[in-house]
Structure formats: C-alpha cells, structure tokens
Length: 624
Ligand code: C2E
Ligand code: CA
Ligand code: CA
Image 1 (tube, helix red, strand yellow):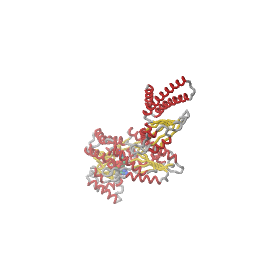
Image 2 (image 1 turned 180 degrees about the vertical axis):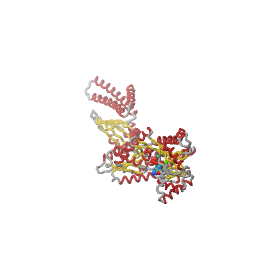
Image 3 (image 1 turned 180 degrees about the horizontal axis):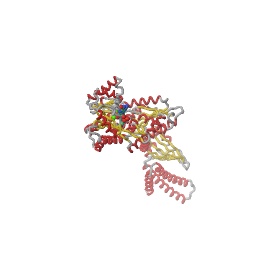
Image 4 (image 1 turned 60 degrees about the vertical axis):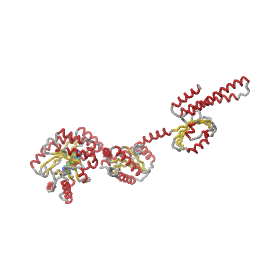
C-alpha cells in the first residue's frame, strides 16, 4: 500500500505537469519496473539443479516477486485508469499487452476489442470500421536509444481530433498515448484565423493578403500578369458618423459579400483596413480584365445598401497596379496601387485610376504641400481678402465675401482651389475654417454696421468640428451682430451630411445668421436641396454669367434661376460679373446682388474702407 501511495503521488505529480509526455514518462516507469521483475524471475527459473535450501530460497524469492508483481499490476491498473489519456502498449510482435478505458472511449472501442494479445492491425481495422478517422498530420523522429517517436493526428467522424504519440522502443515494442485535443486545436485554429483574418467580414486581413501577394508573385511565370486593385469606400466615415457604428459594420459586411461574389474563386479578396479592400487578379490578360472587374465593382457598390427608407448610397475609389509593368515586388505593387488610389480620391472620387509614374511625382508634391499646409496653420501664414457684394437696388456695396489667401514662404501665393481640397481631405480645414471665421468676424466688426461679411464653410466642418461653437466663439470674440454674418455652403454639405448639417444650419439661422447656397448650378442643382432648407440667399455660379450677353439660352437659364430664387423668397446673387454689359443685363432682372471683377476683385482687409468710400461716392456699379 505504501508503494501504491507513492505511485499515486508520482502519478499526480506527473499529471500536474503538462500533458502527454509526462503521462508517458510515468507509464514508462511502471513498465520498466514490471520488466525488471519479470526478467529476474525468468533467470531464476533457468537454474534447474538446485539444492533443497536453494529451492526453498527460490520459492521465497518467487513468492516475493509474485507479491511484488501483483502489487505492481495493481498499481499499473490504478495509473492506467486514472490517466486522462488513452494508453496502450504493444509488444515487439505488435500484440496488445495492455490498454486503458480512456483509449477505448477515445476510439469508440468495446472492452472485448482490446483484449491482451489483440494484434495492432486488427485493432486498426476495428477503429476504421467504427470511425474511419483521417490522418491530419504525421511526424516521426529518432530517439537516442535507437527507438522512434511517431506523432499522428486523427480527425474522427464526429469532428474530434485525437493526437497519438507512439514511442517505439528499440526492440519494436511500443507505448502510445492518445489525447482528445479538439478544444486546444480549435482554439489554436481560431487564434491563427484571427491573426490572418478580419473578424467583421471573415476576409483575409492585410497580413494574410501580403502573404498571398508574395506567393502569387513568387509563383508567377515571366509572361503572367497580376493586377492589384486597392479599393476605398468614399466618405464612409460620414456614414459611420450619421448612422452609427453598428449600421456601418452592417454595410461593411454587405460590401464584403458583394465583393466576394464578384471576386469569385479565381481572385483573391482581402480587407486591408476599416473601409479599404483589395483584390488580386492573377493569370489574366491585362489591363482589360481588371478594367472589367473594376467596372463591375463600381456598379455593384453603387447599388443602395439597406433598401427602402433608410437606403444608403456609396461610391468607391480604386487604384490599380499591374505586375510586371508597375513592379514585381509585393511592397512596390502595394505602394503603387495606393498611389493610384490617392489619385482616384483626389480626382473627385467615384472612379478608378491605373498607376503611372507621373502620379508618384505628383503625390510627393502633394505630401510636401500637406506638410507646408500644416506648418502654415501653425504659423498663421494665411490672410483674408474681401470681395464686395453689390446691392443692385441700393447701388452700393452691402457686404464682402471673405476669401482665403495663402502666402507660401518660398512658393509665393497659392490659390485656394489648390490647397482647400487638400486641407479638406486631411482634415486641416477644421482649424483653418475656425481661423477664417474668427478673422472675418473681427475684421467685419470694424466696418459700418450695415455691411455684412460672408464666410465659406466646408462640408467637413459640419462633421468634424463643432461649427455652432466655432461660430459662437467668433461672434463673441468680435462682438459682431449675428445678423451681419452670412455662411456660404455648397450642395455637397446637404448631399454628404444632410442629417448632421440640417440641425446645425437651423440652429445657426435661429440665431439670426444668414445661410447662402453657394455655386448654385454647378452640382446637381437639385430642387430638393433648395427646398430642404430655407436658404436666405442663392449665389448663381460664375459659369452662368460668361455667356449671358451673347447666348440667349444662357440668359434664359440665368433668368429662370433668378425667378426660382425669387419664388422661394431667397435673395439672389450672381457671381463672376466681369463686364458692364453683364451688369446692365442683370440690372433688368430681379437680381438682388452681384459680385465679380466688374465691382472689384478680392482685396486685402485694409482696402475695405477705400472700397466702401468709392462705392458710396459713385453710387453705381463700376470698378471701385
Ligand atoms: P467661391 O466661394 O465661389 O468664391 C468665389 C471665387 O470666384 C473666388 O475665387 C473669387 O476670387 C473668384 N471670383 C470673384 N469674382 C470673379 C470674376 O469676376 N471672375 C472670375 N473668373 N472669378 C471671380 P478664389 O478666391 O480663388 O476662391 C476659390 C474658392 O475657394 C471659393 O469659391 C471657395 O469655394 C474656396 N474658398 C475660398 N476661401 C475659402 C474659405 O475661407 N473657406 C472655404 N471653405 N473655402 C474657401
Ligand atoms: Ca463662396
Ligand atoms: Ca461661389
């Protein structure tokens, strides 16, 4: 019993360590002892001619050995049946010496199937008949004593995975340990899957995509072409902001499903980041095939998500790089597709671009401009110029539009159309816009009380900053009456962020601030935008004025828009009036205000008093 207690302790100690090998070591211990005992008994029996005393002594020894053997067998049984692992031992002729209940359970065997003496082959036949396990993995390694260790994984019919470790001793006998590793393996597989896949869509992630690209490029034959499309959803951030993250996630899953269907089995699809995807098209002639695929993607993703009332419409920008033309290495191909994507984005989105080497140079210039722009915000390198708004009935300047000017330390003056879209893209427009509001209100507070100031506000400022707060701060700091401030917005504000923008616009208007619809006629000019908010003013884009003197149709369109504004009770300003003829023609229409070089180009703030004095003196529209 002492020995049993010892073995129990050894057993426990061994099993407390981790897993199969320890169990195996313990059983090894038992077997070795067993063998030693059996060996000494056989050597004693071989001595035939013994004296009576010797025989008696032998008997005592045999009895002791038998007792010891019985004890050992008992202990072995305890160990075997407490072992949480399946175990079996075969002799050198591959006949079963011993196995435990766990072994039967793991392979679905009956006690009868595992009787001592059963051959290994009949046991395998039985297991096959019951379970038909599949070998998932097999390895073998040599041991210092001349034996071997074989490892195998079986996938059972019911999905369980059983690992077997077979130690083959130099004499051919073997001990095998079997464990159900289904849970461990599933956890490991899940971890491995998550390391290489995106949990939201189940698509391969950036790491996995790089590996796949590596492999595809590695396996490419000299004439093969590989096209890489880098996709990005346009303005997905604002969808997330408006509808919430969970609706955003739903849309991303739907996007992934649509792309999956388009990519099919022959192309490799991955999600590279939040709203970024990539598709690899291998073994096709290019650029035709990738063009066709990009075309399908654009059409498929322009179909609304969440049909019905809550329908969301998206567009996508794509950058395409083709191996070998645009690079034969993973890094380069990815970089070039990214460069092409940046171009697609900055070129007004909704479309695809193929990489070209000029793009790279342009992109570098853009990066340099972006760095300069950041510094400019910090160093306040901006200035506001003011362009008069001329009241046709009163025949005098009634306000000024604030227009941003940037004096670059080395490049000189940079036009707003060159840096504002970039500032919007990188979010710097929020800080710039805040500065413009403050500066414009402060300048306007020094002008006569009946002169208004108009400030342009970007769509981005409605989503990425607290516009109401910025306006309040600018008014408070300058003590400008809210009625003297006009905010100019374009259709894009209502197109992209309608749900966020409308409450802000209403709140601003409630406080007496006027809201103008700028550049009317250039975008969709949808009446639904005009009717969705009670704008105080419509500004007809300068492109309409160009031809009104010579082209009757152009004039008819201008007149119709003026009438529309009047009918909606909105003031109408015509922009870009450059000549006296244009002015005279508009003077006959119900046009409230004009703006343009005919009155004055935008001028620095210190010219404002002079402009006002000139307008007062002349009392008529002419260059002041
Ligand atoms: P916009 O709001 O339509 O401003 C009018 C633009 O027309 C100005 O260009 C102005 O200089 C130009 N312009 C004025 N009169 C005439 C004319 O008779 N003929 C012609 N051909 N052009 C005329 P600018 O200053 O280059 O500004 C361009 C655009 O940049 C602005 O268009 C506006 O969208 C944007 N912008 C300017 N300042 C700001 C700002 O502070 N914030 C924001 N968000 N955008 C601004
Ligand atoms: Ca404007
Ligand atoms: Ca305008």
